[in-house]
Image 1: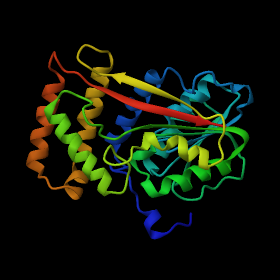
Image 2: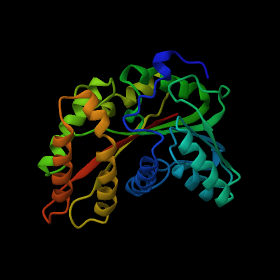
Image 3: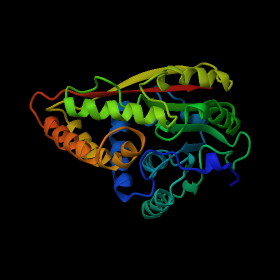
Length: 283
């Protein structure tokens, strides 16, 4: 697939070929599906939805769930990770989901599909890899792929949101993460928030009837989500360390200390935390 040297560089902040990252994304997808209350936005009319593209699909959890629940829909998932795509294909074969397929493709480049090929394009959490300057062009590409009257759905969270927990160690790691992500050219809660511009990007791409809905995932002490998020963060906060060491002033020793302290603080009876994410969709 043709791309400039700049675009061909993987900008994901965690190694996309990591088995640990793949397992983490599987757990994250299941947890987020529960938090949003469904696989599609509220009151979606699926009678006219026959072809769906899932962008940056990871190990394919969302695609496989939709394919299983809606056998009349044909789904394609794309991702930059060879490991993720290989896993998704194998799992789809095991589940005998003949209406789902996966392709190795970089979401930041022109995508190898015809104009209007899909009734719906879904993209979740692109802020983890998509540079700020690339967002308008990428959403325009989604519009090219979506038929007239079709739907584009974007779901995002503001990376490393300040004050999302009462853990001093997690908050300090969030501070480092915000700085690192911003320096890398991605959206973070430093500067403009990605959740504040998603609607604008859809408007610029020609979408109408734009709607949005906020979701909150509470993972405070005593909630059902805490064990899942604890497991997720126990992996993510280790995998992100090379990125932090590269981008900000810190040391491996300090990151390890914050990690151990943060994991302990998450297990305290008074631990409080939540994460907020936004779904915006338009026709």
